[in-house]
Length: 296
Image 1 (tube, rainbow, N blue to C red):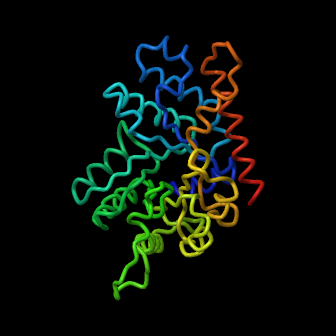
Image 2 (cartoon, one colour; image 1 turned 90 degrees about the vertical axis):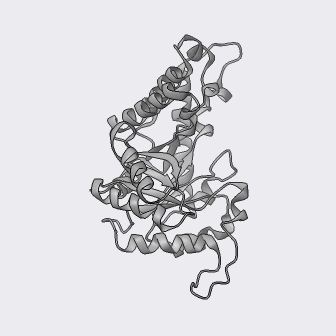
Image 3 (cartoon, rainbow, N blue to C red; image 1 turned 180 degrees about the vertical axis):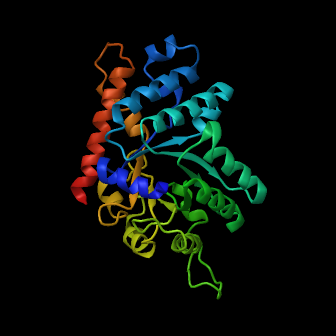
């Protein structure tokens, strides 16, 4: 079974939450950071506690590599061990790496992140160098049953700088840049459909553009969505639900609002540990899951 079908089934069983382990050392309880050999080891222990507490209530996880790269070799080891631990629990993980290079370089990246120390179930990709930045990943993904989410309509404030630029190209019916990218991904999906009607590559569509949501979901009905923008970026359950399809077809990412939920629950003057933080994260994940289910 290809991973996009596994993700569909995971959402059916456990809900739409994609828990982002974008874990900075400053997000950890002080006592845990102090007792660890280094910040990377502290982050890994924290991640494992959160995974133990949430793997039965989250559809998948997303791990942003930048948070680990900044800690050097020890950080990359923590990154690799976090991916491995998620997958050992039978859960799916998206490596948020946003690679966008071409040709043989793209192939090398794909081999690095679909196999070996950094193996993940999905990756995130930037398509703006062209289709030769996507096709090598597709070839490798087919061989290993993997998947990817390609940036199309993101949730950041600067998304309109390029993504919504108007086009005057008579060769395309698409009126703006992100729709050209979306159409390319939809065409790929048509030739690589899983058992639930979604292509092995999905797209990233933020839930902060409510006025476009219904149109985007209808236009790309064969594409699975990774939906950022929930929580800290201002999107909510109602906005995210507009990007789902018959109760599935997308995972909704939240990071800080879950992994730092312990900060709003911390008793005054009391030192807390990873167990407390993990229990708070579980409650936050369940709350988010139930809020999304409540508006579908």
